[in-house]
Length: 167
Image 1 (cartoon, rainbow, N blue to C red):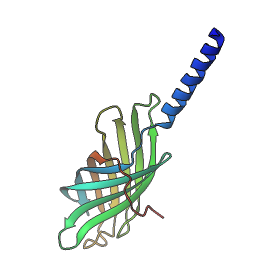
Image 2: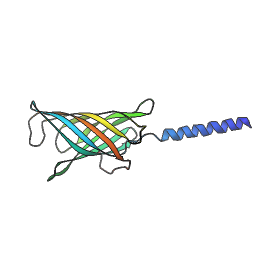
Image 3: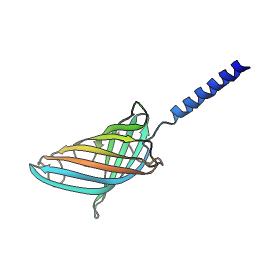
Image 4: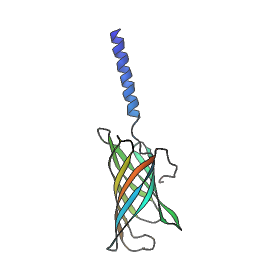
């Protein structure tokens, strides 16, 4: 009888651990935040920042992301698509990763490093650094534009957003 109880307890514990492993952290959701950038345009420095919204959908360790910010009220919101990867820390209490731009309204390269963020709090947020390079920025065509940005984001919804990911 004791042996059956131990076997049943072990089976229950294994199922509970398996269920806990299936309930891993997900980045999916909508985030509000702010970005601030230092910019060089053909060597001339400037800076700018704006509030914005990010939507993320996670599938396995891949994340697809779209950003929305109001650059010009007459033109509407500007959007950028990204794709990248995220990983849990060995202890499972933090996540980090990267994304890279994959589609925009003009030719450029942008890589985003997402810093380790804890998953144990009531709300989830993350910070990131970016590097952006282009000679095709509208109204600055032909000039070398290099910028480095800081992102600060806080998740406001865990609902799966709907958007077309990178091709």
